[in-house]
Image (cartoon, rainbow, N blue to C red; front, side, top):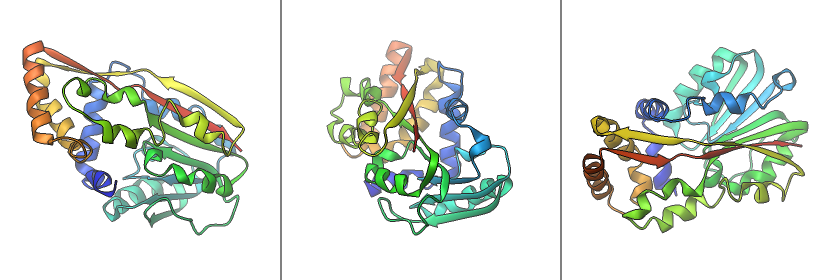
Length: 250
């Protein structure tokens, strides 16, 4: 699991891949903005982002929050996160920690806890999230669908990677959240990533970014070679990118 997470240590590459995904998505609505639209921001003064990365979610936020705290296991993400957080919060903190772990903060400290494409790494944190949320606070989660691997599984066995996604997915997330919260809602984000024959460079970069994920089950170079061959042969490839946004109220 730790090996997979290291793929996010190159923040410039991470930003570039985010742009590639957005540029090739059939759904032109940005998922971060949809997720942010589910939050009553007038009630949010303190935010905790679990698996914050370089501050991907915070990049779209505006405001003057009292506290914005990010937790991530990669020290490489500290500068990027704080650079964004300090623009929108009176106090910005970056904690380097390997989750799941107890976070040294008072109970009911935060109005909003965010986990964007990260909770499948540490679903054991859900109970700790409940402790840290104030009464009426929200837990905002963005996660993948298990079907994201379907196209690749036509050619490769990704069973071990599937087990990672199944730790907290669109399909089982509600059940896991309801073990700790009663007020759980969700919004589905239907999307497909589309690559044409002229997009081989973008597809190659996308697969390279996922190499640590892929290597759990298969050779990343072999997967890239096969997918580029299929792109040329078929003239285009479409990859499932359906996600789900959960909004939970304590």
